[in-house]
Image (cartoon, rainbow, N blue to C red; front, side, top):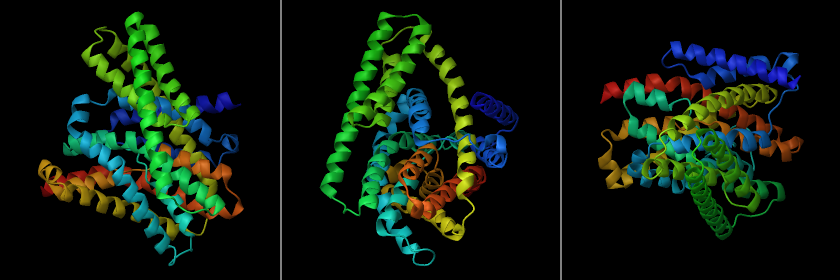
Length: 399
């Protein structure tokens, strides 16, 4: 039964992607999620659910590795400072301000505990701009903004997991927050993940040199992508950063030393098929899974939380852009840059994975928290994905 359901989801994803070829700025994830919501009412799909482990162990390694090795190295070098700043210091500031804002907003809707508000902020902070990168580049010519947003999303997933695990422990046990514990864990997890990724990337490079058959090179990339992730999670470092670093290392070595002409086309040929397949199934499953939590009375609070995620991100990015003279001088129009970068911070796979992580450990009293998070994620996916094209055109005309 599951194989039949999966095949049908793949066929639906194929149809949607085919339509996308005919329509230039069609937000595919939005359509897939909406279809998934519709499928949730069909008994045939009622038992076909997605879990945190499936997202972490099946979907994320492939998506992260593909994004990393295909990310232009030139743009990464040019924007490395702002990308790292946004995905570390910026993410920390976003979680703190967003958590406090959600806590205060709860006094007007449904009161949340301090730790619940910050746990919700940690879930809603990682970004997943898969549906807006192409639109940003083609509709407004904002290639640099798109590169910054994409680079930020690759790294901030690892940082957000540290935040989430700390606030989840606080939420479940009622314990306090230790700044020293957070910093030490963040450093260990992040540095360890990067180091593991370098080792995995180096091993892949040496093996590629030893075995130049393109079929086995592609097989090796699969082993490296998933192996770096699994080993990282097993030893207590960031599997996300390990996989991303391995992908970047492979891209760097392909451009620098590895001269096998068939490697890049072979990798692209394989991963460019795998990625849309995984994304199609993932967004359909997100729609199916979220339906159970959307019939609740806290929609006005969820809308307020969604607006807060955009507002807080806008403020934090504005502080970075205006606060650093190099970045302020680098972008042609500060307001357009800040607005587009803030709006492009769409919630996606990582936010859903963290939310399902909470669900697996939650009790009945956490139903409202899960519903609020699902609603805010769906609002982000739908409204921000649909709005990025008209917003980018308006801001472009204002320049």
